[in-house]
Amino acid sequence: MLKLVALKLVALKLLVGVLGMVFVIAPAAVAQQGIDPGLFEQGQQLYQQNCALCHQDSGVGNPPTFPALSGNDRLGDPVRIVRSIHQGGRRMPPFPALTAEEISSLANYVRNAWANDFSGVTTEEVAAVLEGLEGLEVTGPMASVWDGVFSEAQATRGEAVYEGACGLCHGRRLNGAPDDPDMRSTPPLARARFLRIWEGRSLATLFEYTRATMPENNPSSLTEQEYVDVIAYMLTVGGMPAGEEDLQPDPKSLASVVMRAQP
Ligand code: HEC
Ligand code: HEC
Image (cartoon, rainbow, N blue to C red):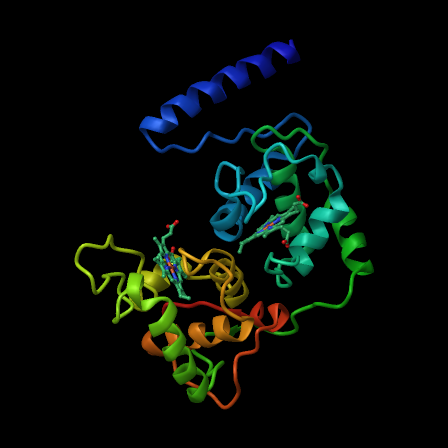
C-alpha cells in the first residue's frame, strides 16, 4: 500500500515536473505520516520566508552554489540541520534568532517535504543540540537597517564598487533599468520594491546571496569587504541613515540586522 502511494507520488511529481515546464508551479508539500502537521506547516512557512531564496520552494537548490535539500541524504542527521540553521555554514547565513521550536519545525519540514522521508525531530531534541553549540545567541531585539548600521565613508566606497561591478545591469539609479536599453532589466536593489521582497530577511542572507551569485557574469569575484561596502551603498540609496561604525563582513553580526521597509 505504502509502495503504491509512493509510486503515485512519483507519477504525480513527474506530471508536476512536466506541467512545471509550461506553468511555473511548485509541487504541493504533504506532511508524511507520524509528523505533527502543525509543526510541519509552521516549518513550511518559515522555509518560504527564510530558505527558499537559495534552496528553492521545490528544494532543488541551485547546485553547486546552493545545495539541493530534496533527496539530500545528509538531512538524515538532525544535528547537522540544527547546526546549519543556527550557526550557518561556509556560505550559508546563520539564523541565530530562530527559537528551538522554530528550528524543529524547519527540521521536520526539510526532512519530510519533497522526496524526503526521514523521521520527525522534537523541540526537546533541537534544544539539546543548541545547548551544545557555541553561543551565537542574539540577545535582545535585532537591529534594523534603519539603525545606522554602516558608515558614510563605507557607503562612498561601496558606490565605487557598485559603479564598477553592478551598475551595468542594475542601473545607475539601482532601479533595475540598465543604462544600455538593449539589455534586459534586472531586479531593483533599493527602495520600496526591493525592500518589499527582502522585508524580514537579515543582512547575512543578503550578503551570502549576493556574494554567491553576483555579479551575475562573475560571481564571488569581489572581496568580502567589497560586498558589505556595496550593501552599505544600497542601503544609503534606499534612504537608510549612516551611523558611526562600518558594517563588518562577519556573518554573525550581519545576521543580527534585519531588513525593514519602514523605520
Ligand atoms: C543565502 C543562501 C542560503 C539561505 C538563505 C539558506 N541556505 Fe542553507 N545552505 C546554503 C549553502 C551555500 C549551503 C552549503 C553549505 C555552506 O556552504 O555553508 C547550505 C547548506 C544547508 C544545509 C546542509 C545541507 C548539506 O548538504 O549538508 C541545510 C540543512 C540547509 N542549508 C538548510 C537551510 C534552511 C533550513 C534554511 C532557512 C532557515 C537555509 N538553509 C537558508 C545557502 C543558503
Ligand atoms: C551581468 C548582469 C549583472 C551584474 C553585473 C550584477 N547583477 Fe545582480 N542580478 C542580475 C540578474 C539578472 C538578477 C536576477 C537573478 C534572478 O532572479 O535569478 C540579479 C539579482 C540580484 C539580486 C537579488 C535581487 C532580488 O530582489 O531578487 C541582488 C541583491 C543583486 N543582484 C546584487 C548585485 C550586486 C551587489 C552586484 C554587483 C556586485 C550585481 N548584482 C551585479 C544581473 C546582474
